[in-house]
Image 1: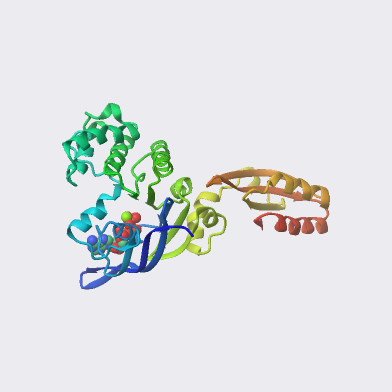
Image 2: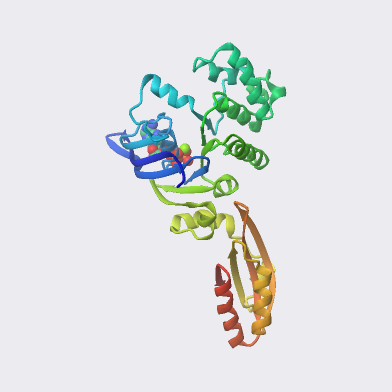
Length: 337
Ligand SMILES: Nc1ncnc2c1ncn2[C@@H]1O[C@H](COP(=O)(O)OP(=O)(O)OP(=O)(O)O)[C@@H](O)[C@H]1O
Ligand SMILES: [Mg+2]
């Protein structure tokens, strides 16, 4: 059985606001396994940050419990709380660096804060700066760095005290695509090489798709769906999840195809290891229809292919119907357009 590192049990976080109660997190139970990259996705105000912040008690639960390494942390105070936080690094959308300190001192500060010795700091800071690829920027101030570099400092700071969990609250939302990809790659390497469990929040399925093993979909303070990322993309259960993944997988048909309304068009969605070419050629051979591939797109989600083909199918109407049924048995989904 997989080893649970973080567990929420009937967790509620309520904020009193103007005489009313805002239920930021409602009756949430969830297990996160040691060594995984776990995603939490949802729209603004869903409660993602609030949920994440209960893991290191930046946010205290109103009701229910949070377990880290099997220990109920909900009531921790003083030294026990400091010890918990030393084992949990965190990075933020806006990096949260100290602008008056150099890169080196930003990282050193996190170690001073938990009472590490000068010697430990002098040894560790260059190590983590090297790890994030910033050895040559140790003396720079944050204002002189690009967004991607600032987040690398954030990551170095979060790793300075050798945490076993890394919490990431929208770590790439302030970055362009190139820097987003580079930071996600770095986080994945940290997960794989150092064995650090990562919990990452995003409002974009694209980010989740690139780095996570499993994902929880949050809406209105509740987790409405939890699954392997591949399953969430190929078979989303909830309408809200469907709308999130559609953004990534639906593509506009080219103008020339859309304008020709006489064509019998099928959208074929296939997943996993099935080779789509074999399916198409088998259909053509067995059912004596013609199939032209007009448009196609393949996504790789956790290294497994997930593809969409738009095909035109022609031939004897009976055979066309049969071919469509046959296709349906061989691929994930067939839709008439
Ligand atoms: N300290 C607070 N006091 C009062 N209400 C709060 C507080 N923090 C969060 N909330 C409210 O709780 C709800 C959830 O907020 P939260 O920040 O967890 O959402 P989120 O999913 O992280 O959103 P975003 O994508 O915008 O960061 C929102 O309605 C928010 O306004
Ligand atoms: Mg948030």
